[in-house]
Length: 454
Image (cartoon, rainbow, N blue to C red; front, side, top):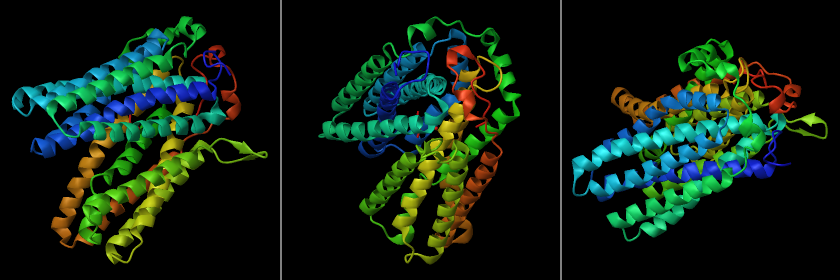
């Protein structure tokens, strides 16, 4: 199928959008991991500094609804996607320069870092939001979960390749080498995104007039979306599920070391086991909405709900592990948690794509931006909540195993609540998705529904 058509994107077009997502991830992973390590280890700065900078890049993503509204008004997504990657690349380069400056000009370096991480958040908001809208509008409903899986797996590949190559090029470490590597990655990400988007949206969509409703003020557009009960419900679901998803990020490895006696290398390998499970879960969730031999393999809502329930079950397993350590099969439990997390997250993205065109016409970008902002807020608070809750539990309970178990128990309850919310998402017959996007502006579907991710 021609990827430049006004009809559904073929797999080649979906893969091209995956390359853009990989470009976004390549720059983000440097700012959230590599520069984090340099600040703490090489520069001996408090870990709170990179933590606050990463939280800032999430907080700035509250602008996602406004970015989505801008693309709604213009009627095209490509300028916002490419422009977003350009701003992100500038922020990534600035963050590297700031980190290098901190070694000799600490105050100036920190000031530049604040500006640069804000640019990273703005770039992710503009590029990531419009990319998801374009994916939602141009991919037919039955293959949306599969398309989401392709795009997210390519993003993870971008993480892995960038981390591997950047780690190799950074040795032996010097500030100049750090800036050079980050500059090269940022430039390559921008070129890759521009090449991937070239002609993808198509001349017909490029010339299509934006719906009249999209020309109203942003506050009115946001109010209209928020007035939709299903949009509000899904916003709450995204926030709560992402809060639960990210709460264990900062405590799983310390838990494995403190309670199970894992060495730093072994706890890092445990994180790899979890990511491997997440990847497997994403690939499984790609089956959502598909039919084999005339039988449905489950809707995105069913996979979202089931993934949340399975995530809760895996977390309750971690509760048991805290009470029975070291006898509990921790690695197997963590792998299953990764599978459940991956399945629910991809199915949720598929559901998000289904709902993007529901309600008033010309509001796809605002809806996607609202949910992206909820995801970013959930991620920003999740890590802080997990770390603070584990410290409080250890102070109140004293024993490490039960203290961590209490935090995992709260996470499990949040996933159960997320599953209950997912069950309230109202499905729309798949036939609504079969009409070309051009012929039904703003009313593609009536289905209520992040790593990360960007």
